[in-house]
Length: 317
Image (cartoon, rainbow, N blue to C red):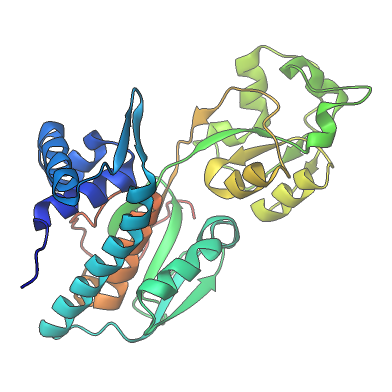
């Protein structure tokens, strides 16, 4: 006879681990933070050891929690696959996702190994392109786009939010003209993303300089890149100072290839969205991919949404 912990306690622990706290888990599970805390405490008592260190600003997995979480996640994935099979779902075969090149290179591609481990039978094809998709005429199941989420005729789900802030190579922080404040930017080359739009102001240098009250840097002196990935590469190479988006530069920051010369950052006006036809909700492969993206981004499980029609609108990519 199996002696299993309560399913609700397992769900509470897994959600709290992903969100780093009881509040985020409570929102996802539609219960109170106290209820999540109680469930986790019960699971710890069942297992005979703590799974979290309770810290003033959140939770931190104990060694036991870090060991337990991957096994539990794999078990939940297996349960989901089994349920899909019973419902007639198909979690095997080809799935085509249209994605921005910068988001693919900077955030999605480094995480695909985890998706493959969870769904080994899904053959994911990432269509990297800087344009919107007509889902009625093109062989694409889902698009991941950057904008305000206004895509008439499609269902949309917010999958990732981010912040924007100046970035540069560590080499620019030292030397004869070190970067200590915004006023020091007049001695350095500014790197620009000309594709940034007026309603996305914090991706543009003029907005940052106006906000900091700094005059002097010549905005026409720097280099422009229509591809965000190329601009980030130029920053890594020490060619100048750019404006980074947290989702795309986190790996470079952790590896020490980039640094933040100033401590300030701003929430991005845009976010990353999954966009798809309403009928795609009947595609278990697409919904499995969406659930996976939401889980690794920390945005929770798939919410419902409803928008009618056929094509993406004119919201930016």
